[in-house]
Image (cartoon, rainbow, N blue to C red; front, side, top):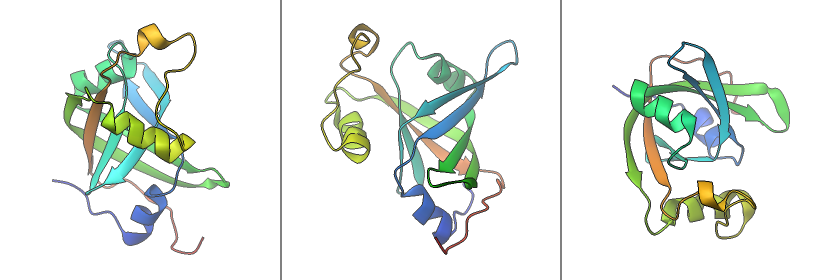
Length: 141
């Protein structure tokens, strides 16, 4: 069952900021990676590429911890425990282009020197908020 997201938290998640994705390696060690996201239709949508270790961890464990940090105030954060709903290819690059427009204001271009690691069809993932993560966000900005 998905957790309820307050209006203040939904507004916070609508801001442009990276998310830190926390997963566990097979050894049990914690792995944290930054990612682009969007909060849409009650789901957190992230984008990655095949071969990204954090994506492998999420697919194996079906869960991740997400940390959102206000770029203007590092003490204003939201922590969300999530469950993976699904991953799917993005052959037309619609999702990564939408995220690139959100974060950079332009269509997606793979980082220089990484084109080989970023296939033309990056997978996108949809996660649902789960549990009772603390959300120390006030409605006042």
